[in-house]
Length: 372
Image (cartoon, rainbow, N blue to C red; front, side, top):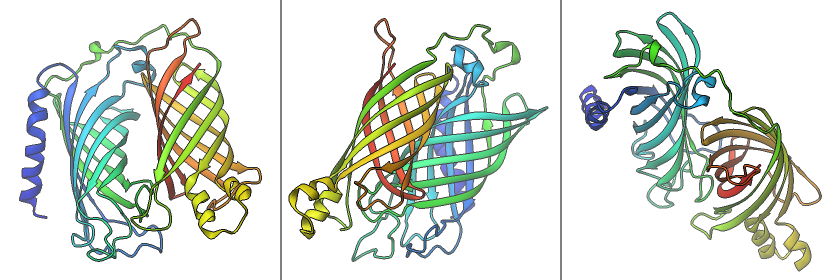
């Protein structure tokens, strides 16, 4: 990839956002370049990953300044929407990647004109090439064009003028379809990043509103939710089996935007059930039980207005643990909470979960629930 291509790509991506950013105070545009490589995070990967991968991203951001009470409590984060493009190092096998990434940037430390920040994003990615048994058999990292795109970055930001900032740091980008289509070992791209941001109408210290009154909140509560996932199992291009999940948990709210929870889950995995049904290893009653899973979990959620981002760790319990990779699992959770209703303040929500056993993804599920 030539420098000319990078400059043209950045300019074209920034142009519409630059025009929109003139509308109101607090909006900014940042452009960042990624220079890294695709890792072989498991010996099972058969891709050739020699060479450097490069990428560019344009992030259209809004700096919170205290309009909502949680802004000050979270030290005024930035909400963003990024468009990214990666030239992966092995074009013949991996092709290129395009990403659409809602994200949030949180401050870590501040000293004079320097800031240390982290950006967390969860969005949708599209890869131009994926596994094909005839045309691309070595790419067992990705089995579909459409994937989850997750990005985590830590970077330093140096104020240059009131309008311009320089940034430098590291990033980690991940593409995966959650085993909805095999194979799915995933693509991981660690990289060094360098970029700049421009704010046409920057905020000043007097623009920030620091609320002295924190919203009231319930100390103890609970939530219940139902989720569904679909995944391929063992066979490439085979049927997609449903996985149903029910969860209920007690919650402890440390404050109005930090919640710890402890709960139980019931899961029924039709992929496992059909596998044992095909083997005819057990009688019908036992075969039906192979799809059952009982789980106990604990986790934490951080709230940003209507958005909740969290993680949980759980263990399998009981006699039904057929084809579980490990005795424990981990999940990343994203939820959107609607306006509470009723005297008790019940909050409906939509949920997105990514379940894995360490780095081995099992599924991506969607669902809904209620929280008190």
